Length: 446
View 1 (cartoon, rainbow, N blue to C red):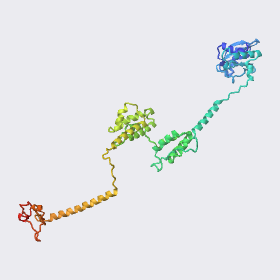
View 2 (view 1 turned 90 degrees about the vertical axis):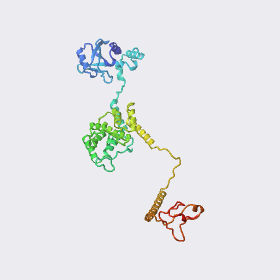
View 3 (view 1 turned 30 degrees about the horizontal axis):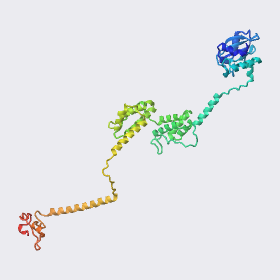
View 4 (view 1 turned 180 degrees about the vertical axis):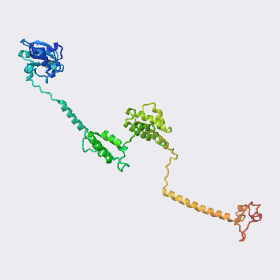
């Protein structure tokens, strides 16, 4: 047998061509102990096993078919094996080299022509291998990792260093809050949101947080940075929350949330906003899961809203008929309902289609002053008249009341004068002719 039939030999033995080798130029009298010692000295073979022997054409040497536990790489397998100064070297032939990927099928025309030509020349594939320049494949794994790291770093950086961004408000942690600064709750809400939205490196996030801090708040972050150089922006916010945030535990917030009710005169939208702030703090403390937020919010709104609130009444009716909505959707529905109710209440029927005439403010005030003066004058005159009437004795009359009768029909004036002397009426005198008091029948003319 020659090496041209090595691939066929491995196939007949039903071995994987990628997990077997053929050793040649092995003395025919070589013992198995020495063969095992030589095979075990080659690390790339793993745990090799001898699967067959076959003598060559000379009769003095043989071929050994060896099965390996590791897959053979043509770039790492040695060309010769042996024990220096003792046995060897023995040539190593890889059957997988006889089968190109395109020539794996048995009876391939190209493979047959190649093997026939090598046989005619007395050569094998091992003789051709040194003539073929096979470039060692570069180790792209490390280079690929470094390239990806550089790409990620560039992507996380701001596209332009001078690009403006929304800065955080100043926060110092002092009490009372100095002018121009935010209180802790307002600052922390903004900082938490901005840190999650900033598309920049972690070092840039930490720098933006530090530049908004003053006084005790800046000292706290400096202590965190000194204790751990690998602290992130989130660690900075946690340290500030520990120093300035609420000390309420999960249990405290749960009780506070369950005991929060709508106050009289408070809109349902305002109550919903106040309730959600407590729920958000409870979520940050880990007292509730994110998938339970909508259900917990809806349950408390139904329970804590006023019974006289018409918007809450509609929510109670729809509560069991659908899944609880999110905060944004629930707030939108509540505000739309409140706006509809306020529009209905404020609407008034139109009495007159004519537009009202606007009266100048100055003229209206002048008319009021004139009326006041007239009323005052009339009141003074009436008071004087009443004073004069009450001062006269009972039965005295300063003027003679004329008799109205036939004299009125004839046009005669009934002025009570007789040759310059006044007629003094006496009490109890009654005129039977005209029916008036103060004179007698003889005084009536006509």
